[in-house]
Image (cartoon, rainbow, N blue to C red; front, side, top):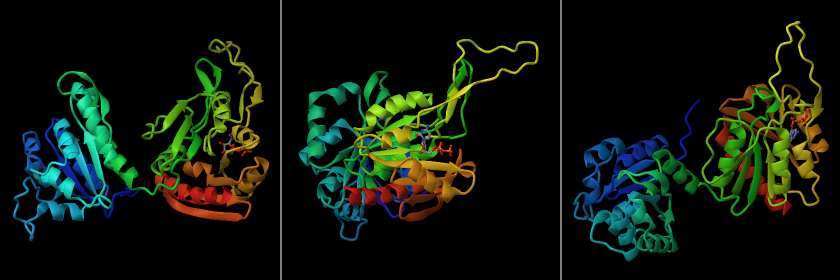
Length: 405
Ligand code: CTP
């Protein structure tokens, strides 16, 4: 499958100030260019003590700027030219000193000068702090960061963890892939700004005994992609996940469950606090009527055990039947007659939208084809990777919410 290039057409000025985290800026440059961006690196003198412009030029494919006296721009004004070309300026790493300089509006070296000279309405400034935990926690830094945000900058991180100085705490710069995803999310249209979404994802696991159970091949990828796309679009997202091996999308609140009953117990009380409920989970329809407390052993007579099954609660139908239900979106994974089954589910579960996909063709895969079915008809979202489809679904959903309001 072709890799998505979510930053195609974006020109990023990547500014490095002095700090050990400069080593991550090399990888960050690769991540941004792989995602389709062009990257113009600008370094302070402090940054040059940690990584060379040679490395950064090789990785970005462009000469690095380090001085406001650089005579290469025709008008001899690097700070003007570089800031006018940018779709965003990302400072990574941003040292405590550099943040203080931004807050003061200092302009005695190229990087802070170009941040000050940028057209503030058009060129966003994103800042990824990196420093020792005491420096980060110091009231002076906290005051500066608050002021920087009040001045319109977006602060990314920092994360907590091991620090180069040997201490452990807040102040680590986000990892390159995390910064790339933050930047991608930053550029997504905020179609669901302020909306609260509840999403179920993955399979459920219905225990037979302490070591065995009934489950299915759902990987959770589609639900996780929708959670990410909704978060990128500005929504506040709660993701209730069955047993899956997927990283939690950034800024998404995740609650892990095992069985359908546990999923029901988490979802039902939470549903009323959300404006949208998207049920992508492949919930097991049945569970063993009784769970054996101990592992079931072979009886030595070649007699296979017989299990009685009991039906699980239908989470989607229960949410849709609430007195003031959120806008409910169901998923239908079918092996045949997709449209017909999707339409039946729309009526049976009393929901305004069912998203159909062919189960065996989607479970565990990275790409998918979806068909959106409502009372008026259906619309296909053509085959694409699951995040692209999730963004298309978010776009569609945002329109539906506007008209259902
Ligand atoms: N669903 C649910 N709770 C269940 C079963 C299903 O919330 N106990 C939700 C799924 O998350 C999905 C939709 O209902 O959004 C359709 O699920 P599916 O299992 O395909 O439909 P069923 O109603 O179980 O019908 P059938 O098994 O006959 O296809």
